[in-house]
Figure 1 (tube, rainbow, N blue to C red):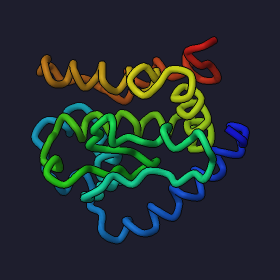
Figure 2: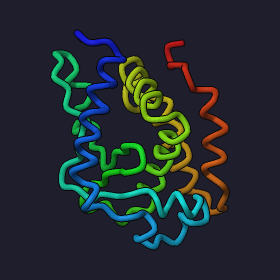
Figure 3: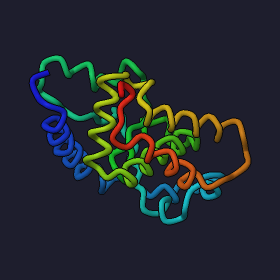
Figure 4: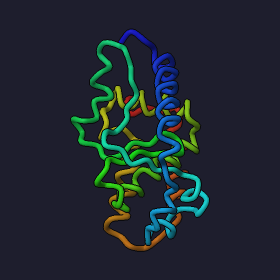
Length: 175
């Protein structure tokens, strides 16, 4: 890795900005999907203001740095969604999965709470030190998604997630 985390974050921010500009006109509000359960877990304004783009290939940041190509090789993880601030991308064929939308909305909350630069810095640092599945931000999203899939008692997910984020802010799993 030739670049620092801060330099990579700036490159990723630029790549994400271009991706969002490209897909924003083709995206829809989460509320347009009229999911039955999500409104019982998330604030109405979050569902109204968060956008979803259905894509054939999940758009990942383009980084021209030897050794970093594996970092964003999400194909090996078979991911079906990725979140960039208040828009997330879902692989075609999975757009009706309420559970997947739930998972991505957790990431929207994380982005909003931490801010774009801090979220990217923390997420990238944890991705480098712990990998995708053991990244604390993914662990939170998967844990809440599993609860959504198995427990049908609604609760304020945004409030629950935000109580966990201060303990992660500025920390990596390696700390």
